[in-house]
Image (cartoon, rainbow, N blue to C red; front, side, top):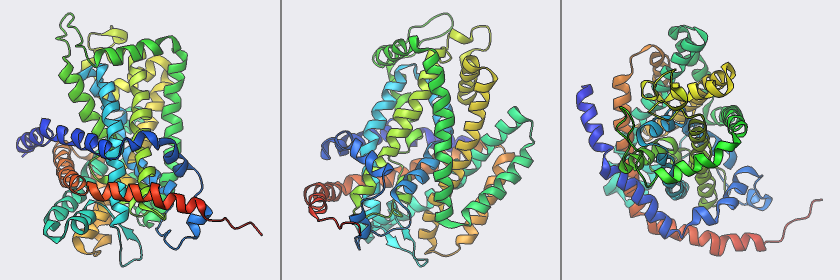
Length: 473
């Protein structure tokens, strides 16, 4: 079974899929005239400031949670262990140049994430509980017509399965490993605690999930990015050389040395693109599953907020990891800073990042990575539950929600004690099979995306700005 899944994944995550992802981002960037660059500051303003009172008063400003909580919930699911282990893996396989290509796919992915969120808002529906539901399955069915419903069902089916794997049991397994290695806590104990905590949160619905996410994400950012910045500042003289390596090796191979065979440019591109996609999820359609719950008066507003998540994950968090590994020399497969300790290729991605932090900050650095893995993993479990629930409720017409919750809680506990090689393989396949219908819909609905964008900036925004504001009594 594992051999079969590995062969399927080699095909699904091969060059054609990566070209489709990269090409979709490039196409949308062109059609939107580089909106993700021109409107980035405005997007951050929408995400981190209180919504305009005139918008709140609008009868069209409907939804379940604020733009900020929507972003935090999406980030809780997106900022994960891929930002720690994934970047390290990309560097050891593709060299420093992989970071450059990770930036490129992140910047283009902002346009993809923008498009996903916009369509999720435009085609969202209200379920029987009075909450909004959106996502690729809705904009596939409602935007492309009922003849495409099979594609919507396929997305929802694989999304519900992917949530149990990559978003849940894989994360609890990683947390359990860290708890055993760093704190000598048995995997079974970790599994039980994680299952109980997950149950307490997800049975509280989207309001509790978004509140927990809004609490965890800033802590995660402070802990991990703060630790990274300390290392970078302490080694400030290595910052410019690190960036020089990134730009140089993006277009030049890493030379062979000793028993090391070198790294060709195609490996830098492939590693950067694939790990960039895994880190920010742009193109998978996951962010669209929560974007439809945003309380806002125009789809473009939430779309702009959603695209900031890709910037935060790839340009900020992944860059921090990359710079720490380059500055400390722990990316170097020929030995570098870890000569006499352990060969770079003998460590997996997470252990490599932990070793780099430990080398720079001692035991404190190792604990920073350990706690980051725990926070990242648990927030991913909570955030991905919303993705799985939205997919499951589409498949079952909003029935059996509690059944899925119980299955999800059980998967959390099981993941901590199970051998997840098969789960990893199935989750990778599910992710790819989510991505394909989503990208097809984005390409076929690009005219809707462009039209809504033009309407907001050319008509709606000027109209709202021209409205007289009521003076406070």
